[in-house]
Image 1 (cartoon, rainbow, N blue to C red):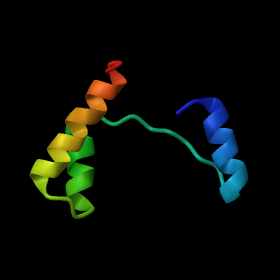
Image 2: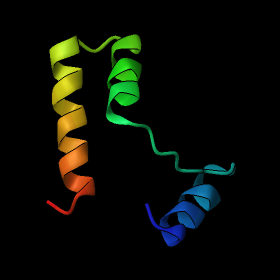
Image 3: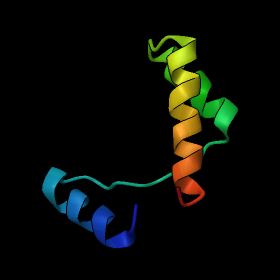
Image 4: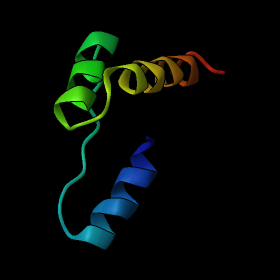
Length: 55
């Protein structure tokens, strides 16, 4: 997320927005903790890593 996007979202929702980076294992664990099946969490994490790498 770019700075411009964070500013726009902050203006719309009325509270600060920040971006944090999690390593893939921590992200997958977070998805599972929020109720996603482990296989799906792993798939989403892999997609996110590919997007971050420029795919």
